[in-house]
Image (cartoon, rainbow, N blue to C red):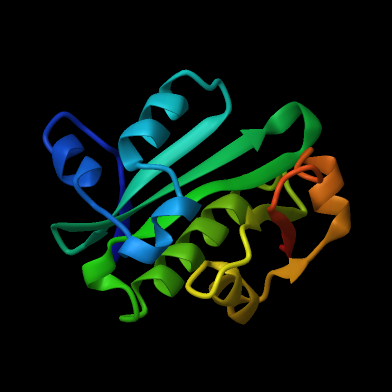
Length: 151
């Protein structure tokens, strides 16, 4: 069963040791970097993604309550567990969590176009490309494409 859990001193190393496929490494930060960034951000919410007791991924949101903005900052599934439906289940749980807050009308994210990148996954899930998101989150000068999932 897939579930989202706090990252603790007991599971930190196993979350840090997770990796995407070699051809995806340029498109998502290392979990160690993400966890450090999360600890220094007032608005970050991050969890380990577990299959039963086995860590299989990582997710981080930027929940900017005062602006009613929710950004899916990081989302990764370890290379050994991709293609098994774990990402879809975990993202569904993340969306359910955001809905439960009753603060946001959409979840924004971005991706770098690449053959083995996350764009197809997000599109299949129901995210749509959005120039509005690209501008709103200040990524118009990058290679990233903004996306939006309406809650």
